[in-house]
Every structure is written in structure tokens, then in C-alpha cells.
Length: 186
Image (cartoon, rainbow, N blue to C red; front, side, top):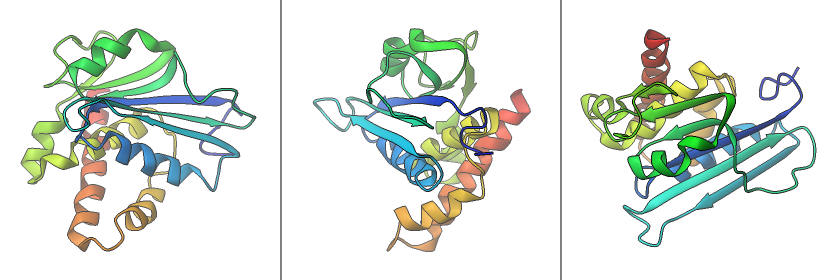
């Protein structure tokens, strides 16, 4: 059985937030982890006109059959990292889907439809605000096991090749912190 698609289906994922929050980075990481294990993958990033600070999103589709379009209007799982993304995409969650949102930055969501994680504060407490995206990715995989967590280390090493080992370890620690934080809430 494929751990990415346990029921031989299609999984549609949206990651949205501000340019500079690492939205596309964790989308690329996610696609890289899935690549050897899923026959059909789309990775579709979109940037706001401003790039840093503008709305940014990344859509991923994992499927065991051909994918007709890389652009979706409904999603099985979402990570929303800012309020502009929450307002734009909050109604695009399919029934039974999983929505995680950055609770300190998504004022329009109150948790009734998703799980709020204060990833920015957690990342600040860890010493680097840039790790908030990995916290959210870890939280998503704890609630919706879309890939085996042990696959993250290899992909982080590949994605951050040439960076100091401390960068690798910080992102892996943030991922694990997100998994623990969401388990404490659910």
C-alpha cells in the first residue's frame, strides 16, 4: 500500500500565505518527498505581483492516475498562513478535508472549520521565525498522514544542500514541533 495514497485516490493540497513565508518552499519539499512514490504529481506555485508580502500559494495534486488539470477549486487539505489566503480559500475545503491555519495571522478564521496553530510564535520561541512553515507542514502530516515523517530529513538535506547543518536541524525540529503541537490539540 502506498503511504501517500492509502486508498488509491487523488489528494489535492493547498498551501497559501504571504510571499516570504516559505509557501512555495514547503510545496517543493512536499512534492520532492512524494516524487519517488506517487505516479502522478503536479506542483503549481503562484506568486502575487509583489512577491514578498503579496499573496502566494502552491497547489499540489498527488494521484494514482492522470491529472486533468493542475489547478483545483476544492482541496482535501490546506495550510493557510495569512488572513488574505484564509479569506480567499476558506470555502474551498472539501467535505471531510483538513484545514490548518496560522492562528495569529488568520483573524477571519476562528477554528470552527479548522485547527489553529500559532506557528509564528512557536518559530520565534525556537529562534527563527522562518521555521513557521515547517511547523505548519509538521502539523498537517500529524493530522493527515500524507507521507512518512522519516522521509523529511533526506529531502531537507537535498533542498538545503550547501546550507549549514543548523539550518537542516532547525527545520526538522520545527516540523516535529508542529506534529507535537497539533497532537496536543486533537
